[in-house]
Image (cartoon, rainbow over all chains, first blue to last red; front, top):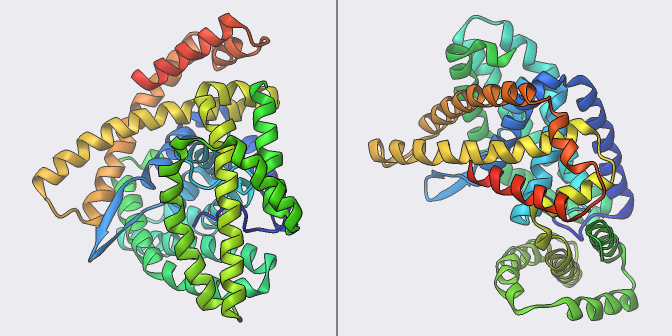
Length: 199
Length: 206
């Protein structure tokens, strides 16, 4: 889902940075000092998840855990994603510094939206089947939303990118299903083993 | 050139290369890039260009006009290569300590700086535990499924959370998160660089 350097136009890059700055400042304001350690931990998990490949049939993919970050951290997902992407750019040379704003916005906004739409319902339900279903939808939606925002950035840069965007969205459908399943298992397991982790 | 200026120059250069469609500006950028090129960049650039080839093919197939798609793909590939060389020359050699020291001069909010440090620490804690958990999982079930992978992830997260909470208490006992920043707040000097190097080693070893 990383957009490469040198693709986006100036106005789209500026919009990405504007959205990211707003999200990060709101996230930092809403994150108490006591929650910074948890944010850092999930930021590290987000960073590492992209390095661990899971074999699916003949190919393999990597998970992103955008939805679990959103469900657990809420507004704090913005600074957590920003820091993880900054470290990925500096230590592993994924993405870049100029496009960091757009990439962060495309990944953190779905996390926040998933939190607002599903966070409370997932925490309050007592049925495992409901937790799993909601988490599955949250995980899958987060990936699709992330790809859509990245696609919108490309489309706003040049209309001719829309063909490639359609292809990218199609390629993200199996990934969304996998991410949905992983989110469902992870959230239901966390809710059983350590419900306080989700609060 | 100071670390802060290196980062500023790299960002400015990346921005100019990213936004420019003027052939003369791009040609000038190519000349500047060639002066920064080193042999050690060849291998990472080869890896990077595998993705660029895929991008060129995708754009050729999806662009309304095939030739325009190829040209757009090649332009993006050229920009990506130039930006990589600039970042590899100016930013990547700074390492985490140099980068962090430079970021301090950009006056980032304190919470974000602490988050950056703790995330780096968290990566080493989680990586350690992930590796051993994945090895034991693979020994028990050579074909790893998503379900088992996520359960391992969940248990590693909880173990690391418990350890991180102990770490947080220890930080607070030593004077709170201000302890980290106290090392960095002064102007750069030999003592501060030593402290940063020590901090970086501590983060990567423990």
